Image 1: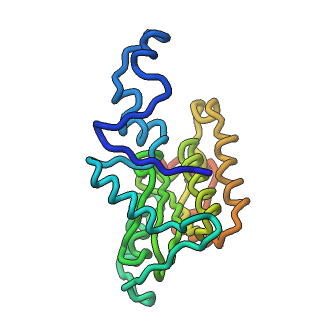
Image 2: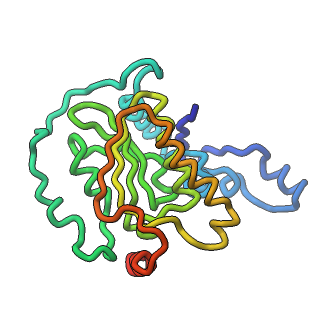
Length: 241
């Protein structure tokens, strides 16, 4: 089971051992904010899923999140009234994807165009930004979205993005939430840091999560399926970034 954690900026902290213990044991000098503040946990550790400016905003976002979810894993997600015409034409989609595959575009525009009332509740927005995860509604039904983000590292997969997406896919499967995946991915990020960090193991977590899924899944390839490490891949990631 996975949990969602929301934090309040500049006033909430999480750590196993505090700054004083860290200084005593490792002689590292670090503040509570640097060690376990909202910025650290939303951008680096991925422990927290989102951070907000105050308690009231945080509680409002918790309510908004719960509005997407069933009460337990044995129930279906709630269906809410919707006001968008399911047969509407989104003319902006005609020009969203560039003719040149090396040019970036914002995948969020596609997600907003598909969602009821253009509402996308994004999770872990500040972490592994080359992949997007969150909830939308389609005809009032909760749908989990996983999408490569071409604006960041050309949408490439790496250790962090694979872990982020795998965790979200498992959550959706546990709570009977169908998954919509938008694919535009050049492959896995090469490099010694990725290999030493276990990209084979962590990358497999995402494949395994999808393979285990029992909920309905729809995949839309918006530009490129995984192309592997080719010359076009290298050109694409270089030009997009």
